[in-house]
Image 1 (spheres, rainbow, N blue to C red):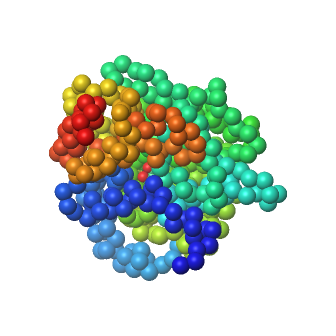
Image 2 (tube, rainbow, N blue to C red):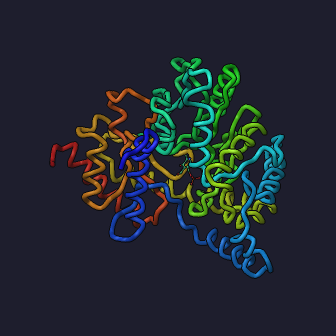
Image 3 (cartoon, rainbow, N blue to C red):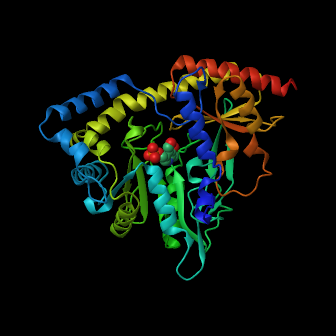
Length: 419
Ligand SMILES: Cc1ncc(COP(=O)(O)O)c(C=O)c1O
């Protein structure tokens, strides 16, 4: 097969592809303990609401037929967009209307479009990059540029906290936003660490973006108002210079591939154009299933009353279990502030996190080695990058607990020099 440059670039084994393959194999059955991947939990009460919504659609003349039989416009389902705009302006006072919202086939697809809108080769021949001001950052960004050398990234500063915790911060002393930066991007809450950038950090990034006349992309896949998997009081942010990306995935609908972008009108119109070329229109099942919940505000209520407490409890319990199991191991855990992950830092780990991942996989435990989560950071020699792993606590408690026990055993062996 003779591949184009594009073909070669996008068929390279990317971290995200390996991750999705592992996840797919584990979800297909077998006895793998799934502490890798980013699949949200199946929360029975939330799933029951989806089932009821689907039954109502099936029982309403014309609804099911419209769900499966009609293309939406290139920016996505108009009724859903209209209700979402009202909800966002009522909830947060954001000055947004339907012209400020586009839907995509999952927010992953939105990042591909947005990154390539603002970075890569510019019409004057210069090149621009997407800047991640804080790494570790979401693995899924890593290969989303159409050209090489597409990302720039920054080491974090590390705050050591009590009770074996730590927290990453943006190192503003070293952060440079040069002419070669086309947009700044952060996930908040952050996948993989569960970090929530402080309001001050966001204000500072917002100001830097404005000063440099570039957008600030805020990945809100786990944020407020839905799915609201956030355990701190962080303020949601939108202004005409920010691009807020949301998703129905972690609300419980990952397979309906519904991403949501909120931005100023010219950006939304550009995304609509890209949707048209790439997809004709984004899928309409997610928006139709969730529309009534958005219109009535139930989506906020479910997120606040069911989803957030569900993950918060699991985060705290998993943290306790980890502390017990890793008592004699030099491990720090990133302060859990949101998302569905815990980020474990094994200080001076005698092998790399990649080797640890393989040893755990051989024992039927899937985790994600941390080195994947530094998109744009060229510095491979920084030991910290090879001392961390990400685990998810979204799966059943028994699975998480069994996985933790094996992780502790294996890591203890590694520190003791046992092969
Ligand atoms: C931080 C973050 N952003 C974006 C995505 C993409 O999600 P989706 O394409 O399902 O909306 C994910 C998925 O796990 C994520 O963790």
